[in-house]
Length: 505
Image (cartoon, rainbow, N blue to C red):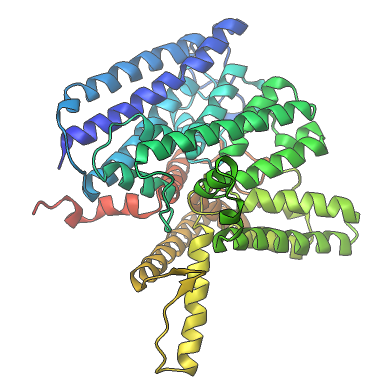
């Protein structure tokens, strides 16, 4: 075990999250947010002992200093250990350890400020933010100080592709270790590289990610949103994180133009960033359009939107134009795993609601900020099923699976099958656990797949505008674990529980 490399990488992540707290700290100081600015609501109100709720500046300053000092201490001396590569053991420990450490540090300001006086709620909110799940423990986000809202959106932004790009770009190259870390979080089974060197690729993605965020903020502002709301919604839209400054999300502004801008950037956030980079920076639009995964992503999105819209219009619930607009927004929201809503799908006709629920088992492209199983895996599984049927008809035939010009090796097909089996298994176990916890079947199924796929929950009691605050502490801890398992591609967490993982050869 290369402990020095692990210490250095996790320390760098801790320092990075600590440094990010400078933004809400400065904002709180400039806007004059003072002592006791956080306000707890609902069952959590009154849990904070007298004097425990700090002013928001102190609630950010103290954990920021602690994180920076701890991060630098962990990095100290580790730079001297030059490793050509780090193996799978180090990669798994770094990825899981860094995400857990980031969530723990990210929860500190939420708790210390009194915004979420229950530490379990603060942990749940931070995990949801970093995993871009959009589930919240707040009853009323509109009562919170704006620096807290800024931090929530930054959790989303760091938890999307941004945290991967920053994660890679601030680290020294450790042989193939950097590439392994990049592949683990990006979950790009095609593993296409932007540059020969991973740090150069990270910088390119960092620029694209930041540029998309800035463009989204400017367009939302131009569409009529206040600048603060536009900026925060841009952070949580491009990251497909879903946190909002309003209890009813982007729909609270009753601004169809802003909703259209949001839909566009949700869609882009769930598009492979390698292909986006080639299209935007190099003008290689053909590479994007020729991608089988992108075409499937577009096809599923448009097909699902048309089906849902037809049902909304056919039942007389909405006129044609409104049905198309609302259906397309909700479909993009679910398939991108952003979890942003302008309507309650549970109030829709059964057909349209079923389309939205089915999309929770799909997701955007690999190499994007989307959670879920990724479109490329669905494509490979579907292709494998088709080839299986052909094999029954022609048992002696020998065929090589292809996606366009790419050959798909049997080892990759087996890996995809194993992943989808584990994905379904975790969903079923979570569904049973939530059902035993007292949830109705719709809420249990929706919450289970929403937590695992990092999509938010559009159905049941914890629907698009619901709060998780009333859930028992153990259940919030369990759902936090499910969010992490889903975001870290299942294997990254489950490997830790194998005795052979810890055995030394």
